[in-house]
Length: 245
Image 1 (cartoon, rainbow, N blue to C red):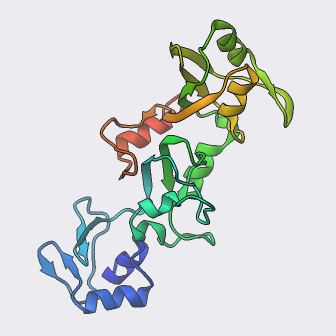
Image 2 (cartoon, one colour):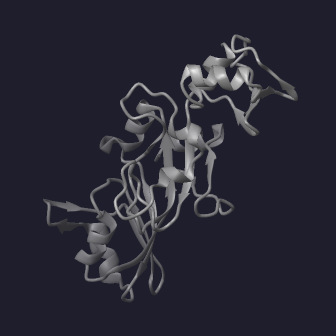
Image 3 (cartoon, rainbow, N blue to C red):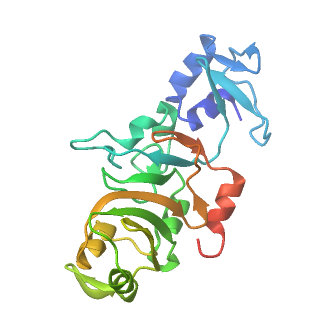
């Protein structure tokens, strides 16, 4: 693939902008500056690396990311009162060309502005659909801090099913475990608006803090700080494709 096409595919700007970056000496292949936009690169080479304006980059045909979402951020390209989670990502990830109208990676589902934890992002529409599809029942694990002490009756009701105000059918937790007096670990296999908060309220308690710790078999790494992101590797993607994910 031509070098200017490689840069364009990774989100470094229009083809004209990418050609200009190359011609002006802002792109390095290894230690060498390359000023030829037509230089051919082997994108099948797993060792392919390049540097654009001092930023090291690796070729990815599709982007698959995890982000440790901090509190006070919105999963929206047009946020209201809070900053967008997309501002936590490098510009190329936010402007990668996609088949849809909106460029860049998209969040796989949403977390409320005050909810923290594991958020997946991708520019692969099939992957996003697969992870969000209700029929797949991908389990998502939440660590819930409750206002009032938990009791066995609340746990039983969460697993038996509670009725929310927008659906007469009971909504059930896949699992509900009290890890401490005010710490509930809740596993859900479907997604509704403010579901955790509404389910906990339906059993007579209240959510004071909410953190998503796992999606499918993929857990949020302990060493990924709030606001940080990283690429999903082959092992991560295998965990998301594993049974129960």
